[in-house]
Image (cartoon, rainbow, N blue to C red; front, side):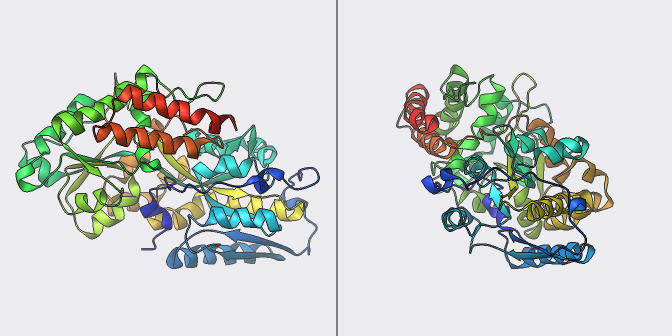
Length: 440
């Protein structure tokens, strides 16, 4: 089965700290292109678009085949498809250089955390008028994914890969600890109890794990409990409020597990806890559907359950990557770029791209296809992740300062879990340090 970069990158949790420079904010001269439909292009007109898909060899071959299929159905259209960079993370730097030299693509894969920067660069293509003309198709995407693709009232792309966080557990370790599979209505108190009972220092088994690398993988794991506790990341004015009582309560929960129960493996670089779970050294892992491929390969006896809830709220956080569209002041290129991206994300192609790669379907309608039903058979628990998209009610903030803020929050979480600071102090300091970046 083909593998995408996103399977290990945890679907848009890339910890890149590369930021677009002022060249991105300069924008291109002239008014934005009014996007027309592909039917408005004069027959026989030749149109060439460039597509940076950011994928590894096998996945690139699959996508290239889809591009050739689209070309065949649209004479005159040429799609120059390539990875765009040696890794997905490097696409951001490549786009930055392209904006400065006017050599950027028409379509590029982008992690959701980049979209606000790309959308405010002056180079993004606004396809909201075409989406408004066919809202039903747009509404098949998860709400949080739609919000991730939206910047300042504009829509600058379509979802490319969907994901969310749930709990994957080792059934053999649960059985050895005398624990049943967790129920869909379990609570964070239940999770703590499971972690304590699974924890077995004599056998070098940790109940669960948390990355203290201080990157986005550290940060986004805290957001579900913040939201479940009634808090939010930013207020209506874009100022940080994650240091509210709701945030402090969420972080102090993990301090309790890490420092008092000592049931959490604290991963210093964020690269080991997945491997340790696969090796049977961790009982429960909060992660996403991108790990199902590996679990099938090693034949682990595992189960999947939604995140524990607070007062019945099992809200999770989504990871959404986006096919971002860019404006070259050419209505024909814009029309083809949008039409191809929409075609690529339709259910018929979604099952041959995302589902074939072991990713979740993009659209709700794809869940009714024979291909998805086979996918669930091939990857047990995929149906839980798919249904869990309904619990991804909020996107991570789609503001340019999010990446810098995430670093501050990640540092605060790490300090608390390692016992260096209390939750209130650490989050207050992170909020204060984030104000300038968010204001800019």
